[in-house]
Length: 269
Ligand SMILES: Cc1cc2nc3c(=O)[nH]c(=O)nc-3n(C[C@H](O)[C@H](O)[C@H](O)COP(=O)(O)OP(=O)(O)OC[C@H]3O[C@@H](n4cnc5c(N)ncnc54)[C@H](O)[C@@H]3O)c2cc1C
Image (cartoon, rainbow, N blue to C red; front, side):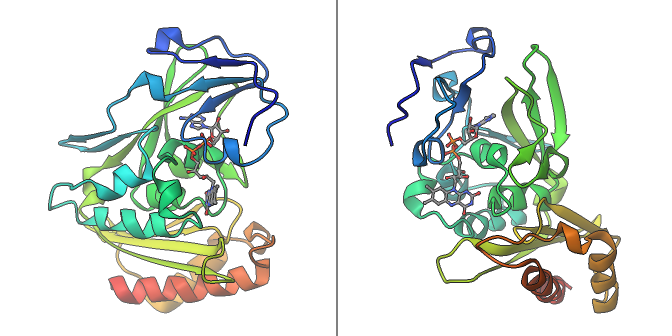
């Protein structure tokens, strides 16, 4: 779609060349959302591709993913064998309603910044305890766990001019065993609930997304029993945290969240 109100495109090659924030700015990553609907309040695009950040970097303490890394690059790269949890990358990508054509350009950073409840890169990052590096508008840096970064449906801690630079997955989480469940009203419809679990040396972690307005992480020292899991879901996610929209009612989402959580618990325990 043509963005008729855009009058300027900035193509910075380094942080120093990022323009000072102005009303009407939007960072352009893959553009799969930006170009998918009219953006009457956007007058300048700041293209992130020209920054040419290294896409994926394997470190001793984990994996660093540039915000501009595409979903396809994440899913098609081979990682160290002991990083068993990288098996979760593809099912998370498949939980997006988008096809592989979208994967080719859609970025991890764009998915996090958009903060849709069905943003399955959010599910992935939360399940693997990822944090992100934010370049703040004033020239500073901040590290934030992804679970804290997404604060609501389409809401994040991003302030005007802030930029997601990269996402870091710790090696301990990457060595875990994982399981994922997704449900939608229709086979190719947007997710009504996406849950993922991880079991490793630190314990059992369950991430609830898509059914709730923001991501929730439930943590246990070891795989819990069915009653403990069910009690934790009721205690830590209140009925008002469940979402009602075209892709599911809050009551239905709460119900399927319990069912999928138990399936994940059984698979990993
Ligand atoms: C057919 C179709 C199906 C889709 N299905 C889903 C779905 O199931 N779930 C879902 O979550 N999304 C979905 N989307 C929306 C979108 O494609 C994805 O969320 C995608 O990952 C966005 O990434 P992008 O790189 O294309 O972002 P862009 O479109 O380039 O940007 C999206 C937003 O994020 C901002 N942004 C991008 N990168 C950064 C950054 N590094 N720092 C700060 N701000 C940034 C942009 O300014 C913009 O506001 C779908 C889109 C289409 C067209």
